[in-house]
Image 1 (cartoon, helix red, strand yellow):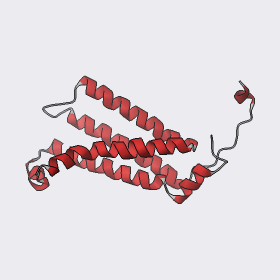
Image 2 (spheres, rainbow, N blue to C red):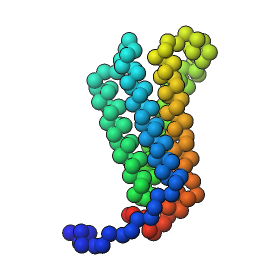
Image 3 (tube, rainbow, N blue to C red):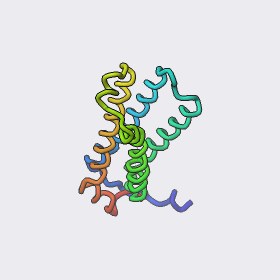
Length: 153
């Protein structure tokens, strides 16, 4: 109840690199959604349960990414570890495992149909967006924002 009576603190403006990070994270989510949509036209599309799980994951990730603007260090750590770390591993695990057992990228790409090539492109764009988002999220101006007493708590 006392929080409602307290005057609102002035929030520090978001540094540009944090805006870039948030934008890149949301782009990564969009690439993931697009990949899921393309998979719907494949011979073995995702099941309703898989679609529900992906939708839930995308919603949680988007909410966490938007929460970066709060300036709470725990949010940045969670996004970095869970989305940037574990999420990236989930993106690359399948292709790395396939390559490790002798898969040939050239042969795969030469035999791939349009939908599969689109999925490969979306996955690559998704991964690039994550790399950009992670780099921007730890830019020196963003580090200062997360340490600043003027940010929201």
